[in-house]
Length: 167
Image (cartoon, rainbow, N blue to C red; front, side, top):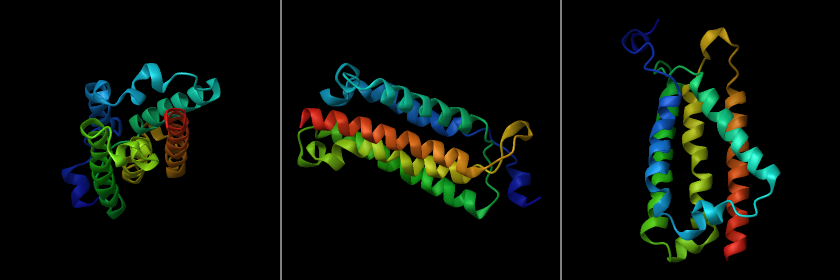
């Protein structure tokens, strides 16, 4: 057992890494421009996209909750860096939309979609941090990564659909 595992055997599970995002979203969604408000954002979205996006979101949260958080390998260190850098990008994407909603960036396709594609960075970080599941379930990193990627793709398609309708 490495020194890092002795000092920090497990500080919880991957769900803890989702909490800052959940708090951020709950606290600031109503500050986003009109296009991101639920009444407009979810209007006329096909059922397959709604169920696919929300289903993959639930799976990502569940899988993260099944992964203990440790910091004992180089890959996990890279994962923590990716997670933190991804959070900074994600939060910056929101802040640009909140404080500069009519800017060229916020009304451009990349700017409008930034909150949809930046989760790929912090979710990749969580996927790199995980190295096992609880309960002796067989761990395959690709299961979390593929689920996270599917969520991001569906979320981006949803956001693009809204952007296309508005602009």
